Length: 549
Image 1: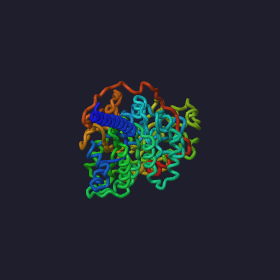
Image 2: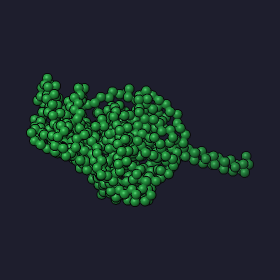
Image 3: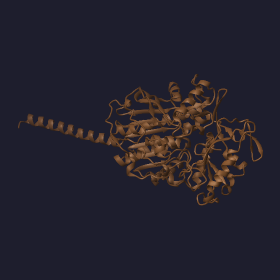
Image 4: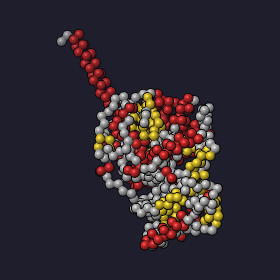
């Protein structure tokens, strides 16, 4: 072979070697790149509303939300009644109504307790998106701060679970799984210089160290702060108080962190469970519109009489019933001595803003310190029912409590009662020979912002095969899980209440169906609840928010 030919073969061989090596390196890089990015991210922001986000974007405050709106798809997310976080976030995570997933109240009362607890994993009766993806795809998951996930280890998934520490005890290991996450969080807290953003720091640390396939993180702060300050927003002049603006800016900053971990196959969901509305400067027309909205969607899950709402000179007034005080005045229960109560009250919805009350007799063998024999139950219910129904106004003899219902099913209260919707605060009633104004027991709510009338939340989706710069129409909280399943090629459960949001896709995926995902696992409610220290911290948090007295 001539020297010139040898040189040509040498150059060609080197070029081929470089080309093949480069292709292998590129393939390995792309494969590694896919492994280094989560496939689905769900950023859950309680109470977030486009009514605040859009003005803040116009003011230049939320660059990452702006990017989502420009490059992804977004719109309002219709919700359900009651707008209570444990109920709605479980519906978002399962694609099912509360009647199917089993979380129907804000507080859950075990049979063997006088107290109510935020529901946990033992009360949930439907599979979540993280369970489905873990079971069917083998995905590793990170579920951070999501409600109804306590105790963390009972999620039984491959990955990481931090239960709802917003309402829990950060020093209680049962809120963390696996144990190394408990240690990681406390190391983070120990060396943190900014306790205000500690959870964002923990969330970023978990994303950086573990890169789960599904990453979900829940932030409750916007809901909490808007309850206290929402009426201070001037929408006409686009003035948003700093205390609210700063909360949205923190979420936007964390969204910017998440963008660093988004790969070419990642899809990002931003979700809120409901929006917000103000109590003051409301017109009669606006009030009637809100009432019509709630009347259309209430009923199946919640009796509309659970709320007593009125309109007074531009203000929406919401009432709560102080049943503990009424029972005390009747000599039936002193909450400081529960073991001596003949009957005691429990509020399944937030005590602050509902006039629905559940009453339980102190039954021997059922309650922790029960003394009323089971055989006397019906007689005692009838006697106490007569006492309560006999509380009427002096002038027109209107009952204070109406209706009074006597359920007889498994797990039901002994009595379910409501405030008479026609009764007025200034009317007088007689309670055990004492004359009181109705306002002694019927008290006004003092929140600045509310979501009682189910204003829609937000939904934004960004990533692979998602249309850019378009709006989402007719989306519902039940639609999130079916849409995720369809986009990754898994069948949608026929027993799910939501639909696939086909309009969001640049190319609509094939939509397949399965009867149910629940058939592989038995779900049943169990009486399991946190230890005393964690319970007390939960109740103190609820008091600080004004949810309970």
